[in-house]
Length: 110
Length: 318
Ligand SMILES: [Zn+2]
Image 1 (cartoon, chains in turn cyan, green):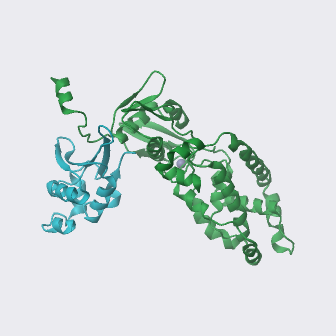
Image 2: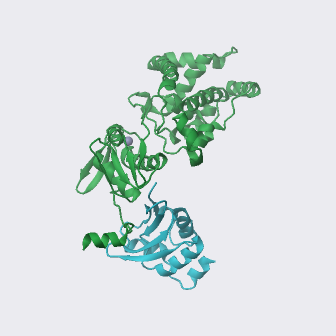
């Protein structure tokens, strides 16, 4: 479903190659932060800029039923930000969509 | 079993608290003994090293508690097993178990125990120490061991428990030469004491103590914890760490476990006897046991989303 959407144009053909040139360590860092109360926030840093993050966030929002946004950061590039603890979801999804290999994913947090 | 569930399932937190131990060392030890018995007899049971884990004094850090769970499922040996295994062992002795055990022995030798029981543990531990001492004596004299542990092999008579025990330890030592040195110490760590402070802060009360146990600079562990948890915090006058946000002991344990894996135990031999040195902006982990030296990941908090109230931030900066 979502995978097909993403595959309509083909930025993923050289996914593994693209991942390490513009990302600091070639890893996708998935972090969690606490907000007020029991609310949390998941950030995904280090996705290759060859991918259309906006498209990814749209797919994720739908898939995980959460809100999300793309934040432009001077040092870390485009960072995906999703509401709630989506670490598990995003890991699975990125792997399934072929955007990152499991060993490229670095999950932080508790 | 019960203690496993308590450990993995946050919903039974109450019970856990009463027990004061998320993971029952005694049970694990008893388990270890069971395994040892079953193991020696069948000769090809896969859990030789687990017995050793439980009993042994060697550096044990288990970063992965699932193994423990698996172990529990092992059934104790019954007489049928014993008989068939006995025949088997008589027929083809040491060669049989060699391959099987070797794999397993390498696999898991660390057992990070956050939850040492204090009182109960001692009695158990004493027995084990005795056994260990006994075995030590015997292994020191190599020939003696050979005599002791294999005399029954050729003969028709039954082996004694002692002989089997020696045999098991002998095999373990043979496969793990470095543990025979007996230098390593069991890596025992107190669980982190995590207490809520009000609604928004968490205290990690024995933070400094844990730093000392791990032989790491508090600053380093602090940086790691805060980066991983994506929050801020500081050490207060009572040497406890105050972290912003709400965290449970279990969560802090997870982070600590990751810290230990990356920055404390040797990446080659997993010995906790290591030194962390800073060298030209990079940290290197130098192992005192095997001498390996490797660089470790630098601690980066990376991207931090804005979580505080934006209005408050504007007010602050304005
Ligand atoms: Zn080492």
